[in-house]
Length: 166
Image (tube, rainbow, N blue to C red; front, side):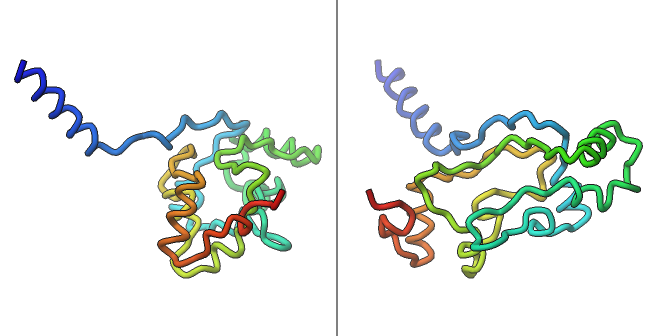
């Protein structure tokens, strides 16, 4: 009996020390393969080069095909994936990227305000993107995680800062 209790307690202690993959999700299937590791890690493109934050800063946008084709008219132009991209570009078709990180519609989030804060980078919320061949959600973007970050940065946790009053 003692051995079973000991084994149960030891297993619980060990399990508590192993990080939970709770927030790491499978990568969504994308219409084209894209390596952030190649583009941001090796080629040193900045996040904002492909994901500008226009207007009031509520959204970081996805790149237009013209952005991709500014390099891919000459680089890897024989790749079937780049040829598919070039065809979409010629037809004026947007690439329908599957979202990796998405917050609910009832939450206000402004990228411009967040990246202006000292110590907050794209990696703070999106993880080490420059190291990834394929993106999957690996950071917690729950309300609790946001509130923890706000507390750590000394930012307000007032409900109306992020939520519409109803």
